[in-house]
Image (tube, rainbow over all chains, first blue to last red):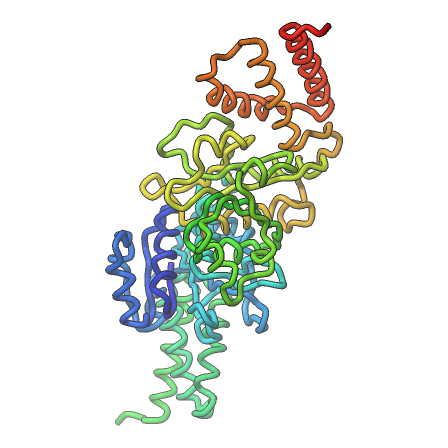
Length: 245
Length: 245
């Protein structure tokens, strides 16, 4: 589980408590507000998983070894750029990914405004908790508890209510987020080398590219092939610009 | 929803927030700690349902018009005296009761120790949230959110994931908690009139009687018949003791 820039130490504690309640142990925290993060970690009764949390500067780093990344949030004020999954339908997707040997991350945004558009570009899909339209926005600790309850009871082979779901163990392996990012870097270099994108466009291009690479659901093999192809293209383009002796 | 003796105003606020998130509106609060209850109700952004909450002295009063009452808690330190339902299986029971025109209450205990044995004697069943054995005890606001999420998404005919469940609309009507309590009073009077129970035993008897009457799942008709029978018995017993002219 990943918390992006959490502010309130009580919410950090509540999120960690819910993880312990439902048997989750791996927590990463992205760019936390330092004094509050220290306070939450040193609180009496803070679970072991909070003291052992991974701290990173960026979301990309936190989810580098994951194969399927879900952002969370409500859709009140934005139009999502990727697939939206209602929470009750999340366990089926998670079961499928785990059966293929994947690693999953669930990402929660800061209390005030939730995940940004840039944060969401690292996610394969957006998970929405079905809430009442008059009060759609949930407290962070409660949103974490609800999501982890749903996964703990229905997403794992030994979950009490997951028994009847089919296990699809034969899908192809998928690449970790880090590999997709390497491919994104390479494609961006190719675009620049090919003078495809004016400088001012690069940040927007990178955002769309990140979304595209996740939307494609490339297999690990396809990703390797694409990396090989774009490395070759880049080499050709650079040799054409700076011909050797 | 019923909160029994909540202490922390933040938890009361979080419980009310979760109710608003999942579209629940009727809250009763039993014997709250007055200063904290005032604070929670007057908090900025306190939802309407908190300002409109019903306040009662006893749990029996709070659930008087309900036909099916669920207590919540973990079983770590006690042996339950009634049926235990794991939360993922609660929606099916709730759907069935609602289809029969019943009224349901979900009861949460105080933060420190949860519902007492006496509180639970008012409940038809105990709902358990399936948590990790190393950290079974949940924060009140998070427990409320998880339970209401499960009900909102799966217990109502228009819930997104409840569609396929069978609706059993033909069961007999069941009596409200208040009627069962009247029957319990009457049976206790009969016991005393019949010298069945020594004075010292009365409190324990009342507890077991409350549990028994709820375990029987009497229909409204059966309850009326039992009331008639015990009224007749009581009248006979008292006439035998104090024969008229």
